[in-house]
Image 1 (tube, rainbow, N blue to C red):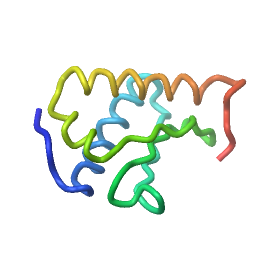
Image 2 (image 1 turned 90 degrees about the horizontal axis):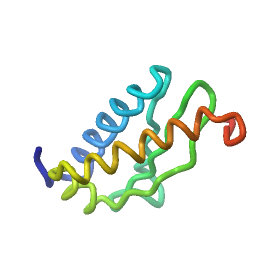
Image 3 (image 1 turned 120 degrees about the vertical axis):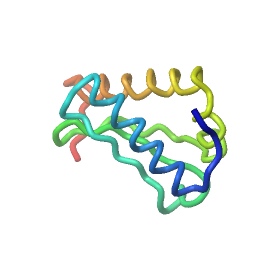
Image 4 (image 1 turned 135 degrees about the vertical axis):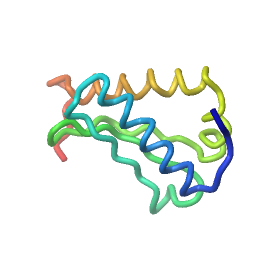
Length: 98
């Protein structure tokens, strides 16, 4: 594991990490990572899309992700959160149309 990196490098890592864990729950799952607007340069907005439905957005601070990606415990916690987003996106009562 490694930590640090610039904003865009960490974004690529986060999107790949989240997508790989989302697909372990449902092969149709894709991650949507917001890096522009209010997030630009300081944070990320992470949602999971399954078909035409999205989960709610989880806000992640850039510095937390950059440091946390070097910690197995932090990565395990993030993987659990991503799996929860997949579960949310596949529940009929919580589906949000794209």
